[in-house]
Structure formats: structure tokens, C-alpha cells
Image 1 (cartoon, helix red, strand yellow):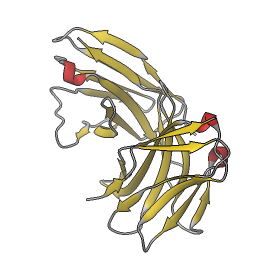
Image 2 (spheres, rainbow over the protein chains, first blue to last red):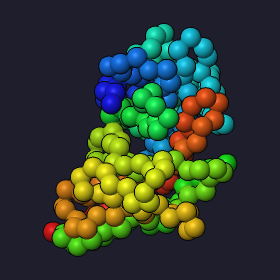
Image 3 (cartoon, one colour):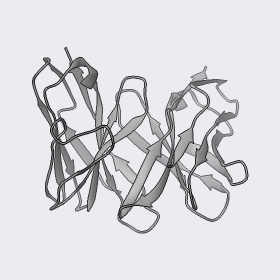
Image 4 (cartoon, chains in turn red, green):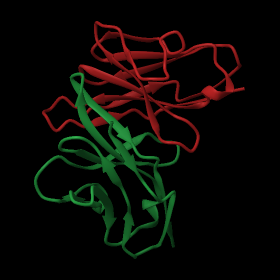
Length: 116
Length: 115
């Protein structure tokens, strides 16, 4: 199983600023995923990041608001741009276990973002 | 489109009693089904999965889940609840889309085990 770390673990930010969240994996993975978990709600997939190509965004999420980088097979960043209080959420990075067809996703500890 | 329903926002159970957390799903084709647990201020932890084979799947921490195709359900169970089981539980379904597993999560069920 993959071990995933995220930085920062939490942050409090002012409206209109941007925050970049880092996700580091201890092994090389093809697919990395970014999720958002708004207070009291379930996880929603923001985008899928494949190394060497642009991220694929889900409906309701756009690159200008959530730019993603994937420079190598063990690292990715998600930026939350021009933040508003509605962006207050936990942001989670996950990777797909590439050990076979019975893939499961492993999740990082999350970044708890509060926007004032 | 695939979907997951967790009809109960919260389940309360006394310590030592059996627990059940309900989940139903909708997906085209054969389902890949998962349960995850989220403890306060921590990320998601994988509990168990159903891909194929026996309908009763055993996972971590004594949890198990029963896959029922006719009822499209995948309820999470444990014979004897512990206070430490108190957490938020998510059911999820996945299918291959665009070369990777696309996972859809349920809304979560808060399990409260009462001492």
C-alpha cells in the first residue's frame, strides 16, 4: 500500500488569496486524484492528475480555480485560487494502487482549509 | 452514472452489540464496492472491498460486509461493536472510466458506539 503525505495539514487563509497543497507519495503511481470534502459532506472528486499531461477536471471544477501540477510520478500539487469562505473544506489527495485489477485508492491525511 | 446511498446519517449502538451500516448502490456492469472509515481529523482508511467471489467480505478491525446483488446492497457489519469504532463510515462504488477507477462515495454514516 502507498503512504501519502500532504502539506500543509491545515491552514487558515484570507478571502482572495491562494493556497497550494502538496501531495507526496512514497512510491511511483500513475494516477493521482484530488478530492474535496466540504463540512458535513461526502467526498467529491475535483480532478485526476496523470503525470505528463493536463489534469482532467470533473463537472463543476475548472483549472483556473483549481490548477494542478503533476511534475513526476510521486508528487502533485493542488492550488485553491482566489479563495472564498465556500472553499473551506478538507482537500484530500489519493492514489490508485496499481497492483492489479482490483484497484483501490489510498488517501492522504487531508488538508483542512478554513477561509475567512 | 453510478451512485451510492447511505440512508442513515447516524447509527447509534451499544458497546458489545452487533452493528450494521447500510449501503445501496447503482452501477452499470459488475460493481467494485468499498468501505472506508474516517476518524476525526484524519484521512480515509480502507476497510474492505468486494470485487468478485464470496458475497461475505471480511476486512480490517473485525468488520465485514455482505454483497447482495438482488438488493444492490453492501451493508457493513460487525458482530460486537467497540467504542473505538465510533467514526464516519463511507461506502463507495467504482468502475473503470477513461483508464482509471472512478470512485463515487456515499454521503457517510456517523457511527456512535455508546459505552
